[in-house]
Amino acid sequence: MIINIIAMKKILVPCDFSKPAVNAFRFALDIASKSRETVHLVNVIELPVVHDSLLMPVLSFEEEMLNDLREKVNSEFKKLKDQYSKDGVKIVFHVGHGVISRTLLDYATEHAIELIVMGSHVSSGLRELLIGSNAEKIVRNSAIPVMVLKQHFTGPIKNIIFPNTLETEKQEDLVMKVKALQHFFGATLHIVWINTPTNFASDTITNKRLKTFAERFMLKDFTINVFNHHNEEEGIMNFTQMINGDMIAMGTHGRKGISHALLGSVAEEIVNHTDNIIWTYTMANEPVEA
Image (cartoon, rainbow, N blue to C red; front, side, top):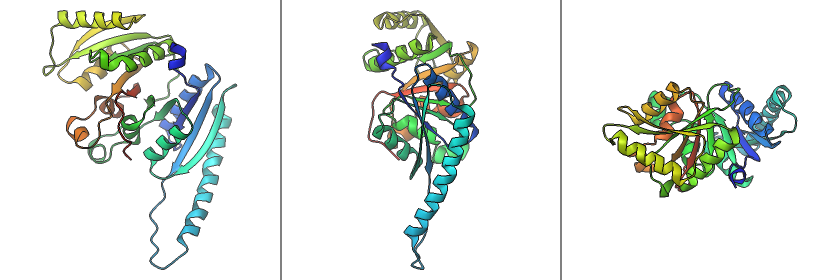
């Protein structure tokens, strides 16, 4: 059952040929090589706005430009394949055009993708406040698991951090996927409750609840931890650094609109601000937001 849940037969890697994107491609190849699966390398072209004020043949111009860009992108795809391909891993190239996050999620749906692995730059300041990163948008809207990384990672994944809200019933689907993720990498799972001033509970009570949680889902090869910090996001990142964690596995509620603006998302904040590999899964999907 676990192996079926963690199916990674089709992995999507968004690729803009930046260093983080190449790092994601290499990591996806490492994952795919475990079971000889397929990696879909996808580049999305965002076309500039062309005004037709002089009645120029705009559509013809755009098609010619697209063809030229596709040719260049396919040439870069071939270079990546020649440099990094692994025996037994099939690599599929695709060039799309449109809004990046929406185009990638549509491709994932159309091709029954089971995992998205993407690179990301650190996003901060005004840019983060106004538009966020593409990684953040995909984490928020994806119906399938997403892995985000910034640095080249050669592995192995030994320690997976699993921040916990202790909402047992609401987390069942998430926990099953995290168990499968742990099984796939053969890693130790570190379940952690971040104790903050606004969400405080005594260590005695929290440890008891964490043990009950682990028993409820029959977890194996795990530790339970309570980590005190004034801020949940920073607490997760500091705990991960303290125990040399390789990956953080988190659920997200995929909040949109005013709810997202007011409440934000811990997973998205961590995606933006940590160099660790992040695995996310949206527990309550809503209509996709471009």
